[in-house]
Length: 291
Image (cartoon, rainbow, N blue to C red):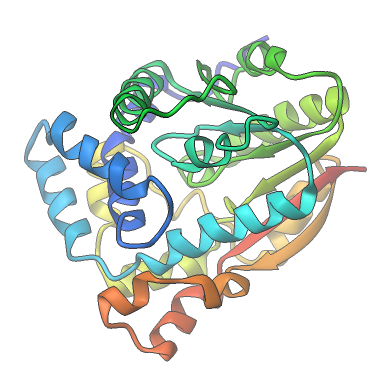
């Protein structure tokens, strides 16, 4: 049964922030990130001055090593988890599914709200058509992280064996009741299939504070989405760990700095090793399995 929490309309408004992450990924060597962003520049235009202001802020951003490290660390952990069935919740404009399904033995299912999922399907179709790609093992479904029924429906593509569940950049937009709802939905999926939940959405106040030191975009995000991400963040890592443990998970912790040797965006941005270290020292990824 769907959890009636929050406003779906607010989450549809997160599109410009997804555009921002897509732009920052395009500053790296992440496969298909550049192609996705080129399609976005054609397709998505800011609807108002707030959107235009936010996009201009992102173009001058120096935070790109964070989403690059996040993306690459998740990929490393997926490889280590060794499952050939992956569900990405609130997949947005991520190129992970398009890239990983080059291996046709792997099945990848993306879920997002209808408007975002529709945009993503169109983008993937255009890229696939131009590059003559075949992706019969990539599925992009309408769904909602807060709606277990829609997640179970998307998971019908899988066989009854372990899956990896991924989400990145979603839960900073959710309050704590909503975070718990997502966690319970993921727990239900893992009870059915087995496997692990890999998420960097352990947004800590220290990470938010550092982002604001670098560039004052919190107010811009609030204007666009009506969501205050600072109020949705954990005070510290210990608090985050206890939150998920109380929801039935055991946790393996990884720091973004593990992906530091793989980064290419710092060179493009002219960042020093010290500046990169500061960006990566606090964010974490949790790999969670049910107790």
